[in-house]
Image (cartoon, rainbow, N blue to C red; front, top):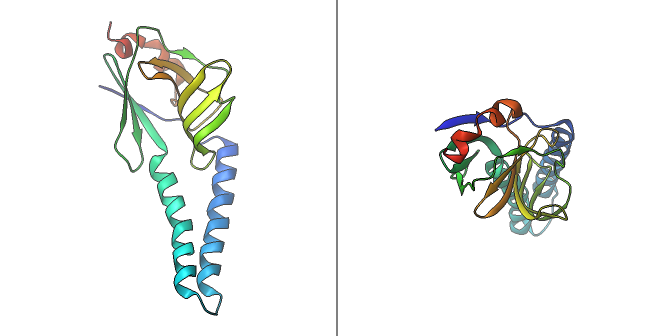
Length: 163
C-alpha cells in the first residue's frame, strides 16, 4: 500500500477553522461562566460546542493510501474510508470544490462529506486544500481528494487502478 499525505490546510480553511474554534471556545466558556439558573442546560450546550469541534477534527482527512483497485482515506480520529476504484485514471481536478454541500464540512478542518455539482452530480470529498485536487472514479461515484503532491500522486495511477 502506498501512503500519501494530505495537503496542508489552505488559507481559507485555516481562517474558518481558527474563527470557529475561537467562537466555540468563547461560547462554551460563556455558557458555564454566566451565573444563574439552568446550569445543567448550559453545561450540555457547552459540551455540544466542544463535541462539534472534536467530531469535525476527527472526520478530517489526514492522508490517503492507494493499493491495487483501492483508495483509502485516512481520517484523524475515525476508521479509514475505503473506496473501490474503477478503471478510469485519476485526474487533476481544477474544478476544486465547486458545488453544493449536502452533508459535511465546508471549511472546518477541511472540506469533507457529500457534495453535488452540475459537472459531477453527487460526489464525496476528502479535501484539505481546494487548489490541488484530484478526481478519483470509484464504484460509489466520484471522490475528490487533495494529496500534498498532486503530480506524484498522478504519476503512479497504475498502483491505484491495479494495472
